[in-house]
Structure formats: C-alpha cells, structure tokens
Length: 344
Image (cartoon, rainbow, N blue to C red; front, side, top):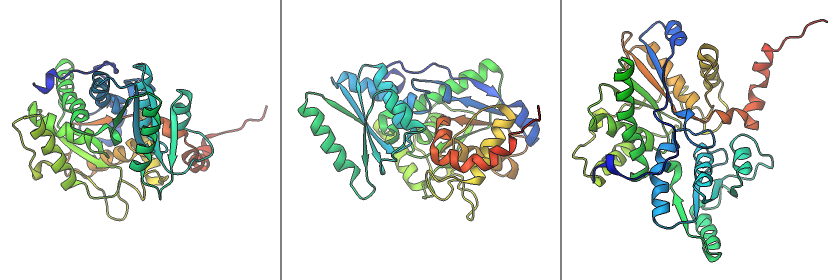
C-alpha cells in the first residue's frame, strides 16, 4: 500500500495556513520569508503532533483500544495534543510525565487537567517505561485496552504525517505562486524532521529541510538511521544520504538548544519577542523559540540560506508554554518594562 493511501482519523484543519512574513522580511532584508502555521490545527490548540496522531489513533481505533497513553516531560506539548485527540475520539487519555509533581498546574498541565486526563508524575530516578507498564496493567485489569503512543508520536506510522505535509506545502506554493528554497523545522523526537526529509525526496520538493535541535545532544546519526528505517518499512524506494542532513546546532558557546530542554534562556526569549513584535505570532520557549532563533541566525549568516533565497519557518505550536510558571517568572522583569503608569 502506498503511504498516500494509509487510513487516518480526522483531527486537523488542512491545509494549515502558509503566510508571508512581510514585516520580518523587511527587517532582515534578505529573501522572502514565510511561515507554515501548523500551530493552528487540531484539538486542544493543536501543533505538529496532530498530523502524526491522525495515523496513530486510527490504529488505536482499528485495534479496539479504549484508552490512549503517552509520555513526556511535565510540560509536554505532545501530551496535551494527545489528550485532546483522545477526548475528541472518545478514548480515555493517560499521561506519564517525567519529573516531580510541581504542586501547581500551569501551561500545558492546566489544559491536561481541564480535559480530564489521568496524569501520573514519575520522578527522574524512576524508570518511565516501568511506571507505564504498571499503569497499563491497572487500566487493563479494570477492562480497558490501552494504546501506547511513543514519545512525540515519533515512530514509522507517526512520521507519515510529515511525509505528507511536504505534498501539502508544494500544493500551496503552486496555488499562492510562492518560491521556497529552504524549510526550517524543529528536531526533537525526530518524527517531524525525518518525515519532512523523506517527503522532500519522495515528492521531489524544490526545497531542502534544515532542522534546529531542541536538546543539545548530537542528532545526525540517529536521524539518518531513523529516516532510512522509515523508508525501508514503507518500501519507498528512496534512501536519505548523510550529506542530505542539515542540522543547525548553533555556536558552541550558545547553542540553539540552550543549556537544557525546558530551562528559560534569554537568547531564545529575544527570538520569541522578535517574531511577536514583527508578526504578532507567538512561539514557545522550549521548541519553536529555539528553532526560530536558528532560522533568523541562518538567514543572517548567509551560509546555508543565501541572501537572495526564500525560507519558510515551520511553526509546530506550543505557545501555551509561555504560561508555565517557570517561564512567566523568568520573563517578568523584562516584560514589565512595557508597563506604563499615568497620572490621572
């Protein structure tokens, strides 16, 4: 079966907007810049996981599952989207979150709780998979059949969502008379980047795919192996070569990934503010803010993205992470400078 013919449930609103960033294009003074708004699709504020979950939760339904369990950090965007998708499809949502119970719900955790998800916090020192097995056993004893969605929805099936996204972008380019030379996306659990890499080659796209990592670890070999396993699994008759990988890590003394996965970072915050002030589009401090910083610096450097070339930024969602307590606390002093008082 061709990947184009794989069954999927309907969760998103497609095509997601592909918009010009005219103010930012003028500010940077290089090529024409666009943004793909995958933050506008799917349940519970959507995001890039929606495209993956459409295929994964089709499998959950086909196998008779009544509950959906997935993993993540305490502020996982993937977890929040999975909860929303499960609710929409009448499935019971379960989250296994790595880290201590913060004792205060903010950001994604607020939304998870509002939707009625069963949330289990697993301390760092405890094995997350073992904890999940214990939870699954509990639900199955009560009569549920649990479908497990991998971290980030990133497996062979989930990656199809972003293979197919390339076809959607190409159709929009034609309809809107747009030229795009480069697409810049996030790489975390790898499904989005690997899927787009494969999609660009499979559909003979006129652009390449550049990724910015959200964690400081080297990703090249892992992404390459994963992408080619997907190609082999679906008999796509293509291979991703090492030289086709473009992962921008940033300067050694200030990598795009920051110091840690969810740690407030002032350089990332400046990138978030740049897009907010130029296009009124909100990013998050854990994923898209880091990727957008890389996007801007790659354009400014003129190396991978030449001054005359056009680039598209993939917005994968997650802006609600701005409302997590740790990031709100970190931003207060800088943002308060915009607050004025008047004498009545």
